[in-house]
Length: 112
Image (cartoon, rainbow, N blue to C red; front, side):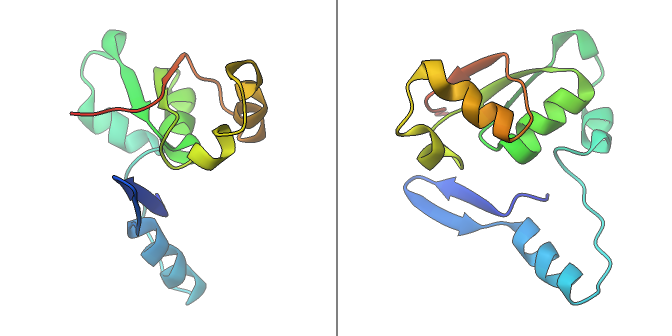
């Protein structure tokens, strides 16, 4: 998975993407498997009519949904929360445009 960090509650943790990035800098070969790459979707999805990609990372989760032409639900209080804290919902497109993504839906947080 190319994600660099993840939020676990109020704590930020490094993800596999951070290790992969260091390995690449050392001239190692890295093969990514996960969002936003199409293989993860092709291996997991059998009925493409009912896909909603849910995620908090615009670079991977939402970019992957866009690349596959799937609907997306962006979780605002995740990886990019600092970018949204000072904005009103009228200005969210500034951030989405910065990352060159389109979203269908958003919500503040996700719990399960």
